[in-house]
Image (cartoon, rainbow, N blue to C red; front, side, top):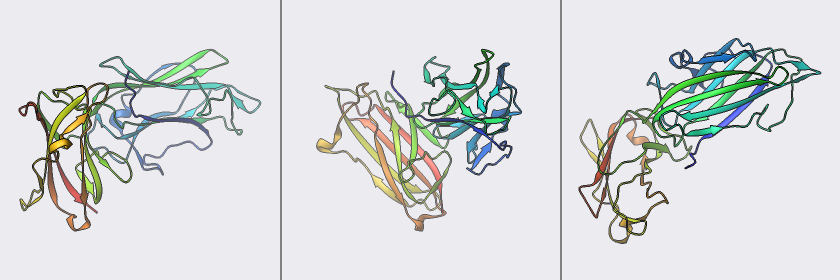
Length: 303
């Protein structure tokens, strides 16, 4: 099983209940996703369960790959406080419902340190947050479960959300024989995915994740790559490179699964603010030039 680069955090907090729609960390509740949460079991009672995204995802009902998600349950009670300690365990499970592959299953624990007891500080209510960064997660259908186990009563409550991850819709891809799991834009400085059609100044990498379909000889493929960046309003060609890989540079060693991850970095300067641009990247097999894949990203340069 290929491990995915998913950053997960899960913790329980005691004290003031989280009730704001927009929190201090910049997460915003997405009601269309919150409404899809299913609850089963009677280990705990609770006041609210919500799904939030960092900043606002403009594609309701779907999650753009690279988005930061948060699954929150607040006002949790019935956790059997004894001598200042809570006897409640939690875990997270994330499954690809298309392939049935389990991407994550954390062990039952009370916090990230995997202790068995957590002090309640005199509070009778708790809240729980599960975080997920969907970096490198391939488009598809998924289920996220947050489970709570009551040690005293041997009962369980499960909160589950089914959701769909999609490629940034402003990136379109046309292919013949070649295919990739995901095409995305990565901010080079802060290492986050661009999930909209707005691009800030700075360095950004266009990446084709797990590109495959090449003629391979001893895990070596011969590729070509062209790049074109155009001002959509003036039709000015800002970048125009017919083939980045010539001579020996065209030969690339594949990963064990026969894939490569070609990328190209563009540097957007402050003088380009306000421009509407189109970035077009084509990769082809030099053994069979008709085997190719082309991705196009339309965006507006901001700040």
